[in-house]
Image (cartoon, rainbow, N blue to C red; front, side):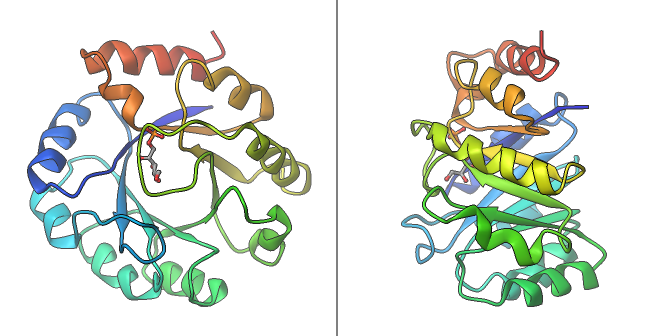
Length: 212
Ligand code: DX5
């Protein structure tokens, strides 16, 4: 069953709180973007801000950071159910996956547009999810890079049961091609908060996820 997951990217604890409160009644999962201004050229709220906002829906943490292994325990302690880290980060991916699973969380691995999809090969039997980035991470509202859909097809060919999420530039224009490529989770950021009300934008994306 294809899903839509909202992502919240902000450095403002107030905005985090506001968006979490708006999304909570609509969604099943909330993705929160964490950035260290090293792996990506931007910073974000931190674990204390997320703890304070206390989303009342399952939290997926997208670590756009250079040493993800250091972030695993703090987010496990505030109740994250899934941690996604970048294969491009400095730590050993197998080590990070082991650390995430040691806290009984689901492990996701993310891959940026320039990174060859074959780099994932050694880890596809270890992770629960692959996050295929549709943009170079760090900011919302960027243009989707269609080439990344070949990565979705590559992963699905070798691992048909792998959950594949696409993140970055997902909206009503790009959504149908993601569905056609076999994506399981459409991650939507800025589109949801464009021209309020959020509920209408959310329903639009749900329809696309249902293939309507
Ligand atoms: C990109 C982030 C995405 C972002 C998506 O740097 O990792 O999660 O929030 O935002 P949109 O949907 O606006 O591209």
